[in-house]
Length: 459
Ligand code: DCS
Image (tube, rainbow, N blue to C red):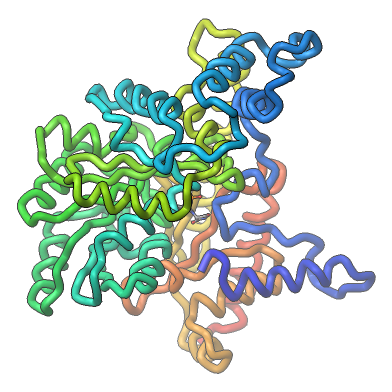
């Protein structure tokens, strides 16, 4: 859905904008459909790119000219990486990722969680997407095998389940309780699925949520782990937004930490990525999966699957190691790194507040606070007349609304239908990634469009 019909139409409109006398009521297409920060002008984190540049052209590391261009700690880091991965970024690595880089990631996970991490349980991947796909491919034997997936969800889950011929068992997040997740609802979903003959093998949790932005509390996470243990269900923890938490009093806690704190034997797959956070290196493709408490047979399957692709790209692997091991206080690159991180995260929080507040002002619209991630997911209530117009156009109400919004303003959002939602409700998802300079105009455009739309279709 984040690449769907509205996005294809946006591409056509963008091509039209390049023509003289295009006749469109806007001058720019603003892509709020996808969490792709650098496409909307966010600049890369300097330290990460410096080290990556040096690793790609190692002759530079000790060249006299480099001293003026790269800080000493960036050169030292590149030197250490090059010593750790013989041949640098050119050769294939081990299927699970270069041991040196996995070691770097493992030590960072230990620091984050306060529990041991075995680097043999780590898989460095081309983003979180292939890792989620690998776990599903290896665990789904046919349509009777099922995974619990939140609704609303990021469509990677529903799409991969379909591709693997498995079944999706939805559990609903509670919009009235800030998109909260409840174990009662998980139990309901599992019991119904089992009564229908399904073998529920996994539970996918996205924390912080996409498209819903909620951050789970420690207590809630403990309940989820105990639930999985009780029901013998593996936990798939999608934690790609772990650095994107904005709500007062909320912090990110990993499921790995909770599982270890509880001494639980739950099988856990955790996923992380270089695509999100304040770094937003989506195009480089990097991520890791940690398979904790997973038996040797299943890990052998994962190894086989990773081996089919030989290895993930080395630049993504290096970038993942850097994201997990950023400059520390006292190091030369730290002040600039901390300034860049802070500027992006503070700005994202400010933009999310502005957008959510403006959405809540609109007639028939309610929107929960984005506690984390990169999206607002407002509910829209449309008139019978608007729904009839949508039906006449062959679209669901929210798809119609999103398409009309695009045609009137150039703002690209994704209809709630793409994420699944409670039957009878309508939503859309928009990122709050447009720059500080652009966000006010996006908010204005959406607000003005909404008023006109509501007036046009008033019953
Ligand atoms: N998991 C979640 C929850 C995501 O939101 C995304 C990407 C991924 C996994 C996969 O990311 P990578 O493969 O790049 O690591 N989010 C998509 C989205 O909703 N907007 O942009 C992409």
